[in-house]
Amino acid sequence: MDPTVPRSRDSVLDGVQERAATMCRSEQLVCRSLARGIDPAMEPAAYSVLSASRTLGPCRVTDLAAVLGMSLPAVSGHVAVLVRLGLVERSAPVDDERSRPVRLTAEGARRVDAARGVRRRTFRRQLEGWEPADVVELAGLLSRFNDAYLTAELPVPVTGASVADTGSRGGRDRRRPGAPPEGSG
Image (tube, rainbow, N blue to C red):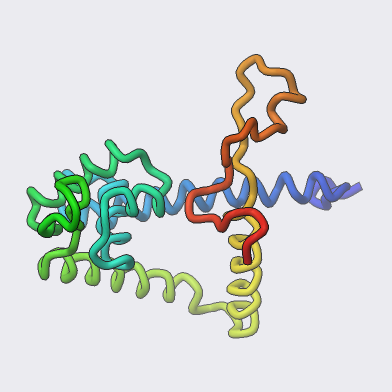
């Protein structure tokens, strides 16, 4: 029997999970490289905050934290670094000091757009040998995967609770940040 041929659906799904984890690690490396291209000391998570600021437009730190699935203190810290670098600024408060929107500066927009351009060109080079139909199929499959993955329940670490306990939401929402509420859509 050929050891490279999967024997069951579970082994195929295990392979998909391993490849998805590899993609996540690769994405972290790409973000690190893009961040360092903007500023040698920038953390990859700060690049994610900068990029999300470009996508969302002016928004509150709480909005950035929700979209990125990061803690409020972590996003606040990254915003403070980005302010010091002159890449984002805090606008006048809407209601109170805590609601001061974050928005890109012209320099922040220029740098994040340049980083995205580099990323786009690199990505296109990586797929230039692919047949157009394969690229279209990949885009469709990745969209389906992301739709399913982003609305799935988050894994719960096993810390001594019984297996039966880990399947329950216990009243808490364990879907990924940005996922639509259950029953919507």
